Length: 154
Image 1 (cartoon, rainbow, N blue to C red):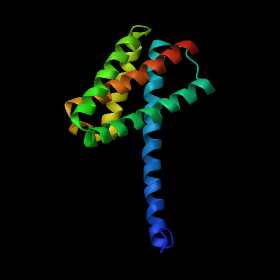
Image 2 (image 1 turned 90 degrees about the vertical axis):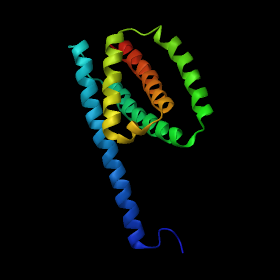
Image 3 (image 1 turned 60 degrees about the horizontal axis):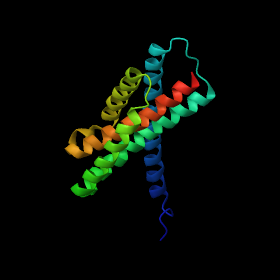
Image 4 (image 1 turned 90 degrees about the horizontal axis):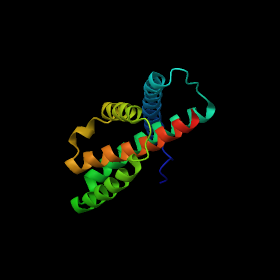
């Protein structure tokens, strides 16, 4: 018997795909609105371009992906592996932050990203200490890249 031969089974899969799609779209819409509001506080004359919209969309997807990946790692990786990942991320972040312009914007976007991640992934509160630090640093690193690209567009 093939997996999709059963009409009821196909309907179940379709419903699950719709739920996931709705989850991603809802997050993405709220994320984009919130991040645009923060950017406009710092750059009131900011005008959205197609390039910026694509960048923002990629950042929203990355925030979801990073959060999901860290939740999975925290649950399935041994502690020594999380500690190694954390050490590597800390070293990379220490170098990356040195070249960052507009630290205030970077921090505000990071805090909003983290707030939305917790809102959409309540399991974050169950992360281990290293798991939370992995999430924090991963989001901060992607945020640094995002803000650097914004600064190059403005």
